[in-house]
Length: 78
Image (cartoon, rainbow, N blue to C red; front, side):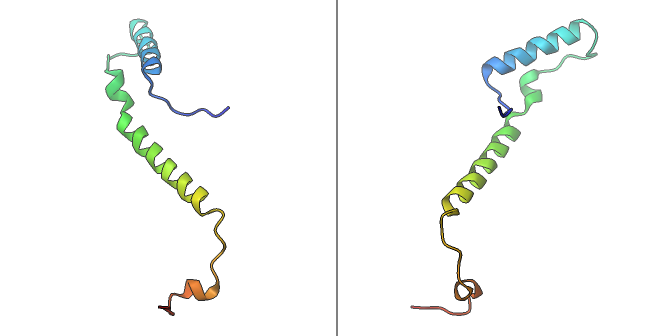
């Protein structure tokens, strides 16, 4: 099973409950906004990059390897 970061509403509430517990028992000195702390824009950007990389890998995986002529770029046909 892969552990994938997930900022679903259920997970955010769970994190907030844990934060409130630690705050009330003195493990955390100052309160903070869990949703701001989670910074979803970073997870969204990382997810987007991973999806783009996966798409590129899967969409080009079955293409034949280019020949030497195709990779030199010096010859133009047409």
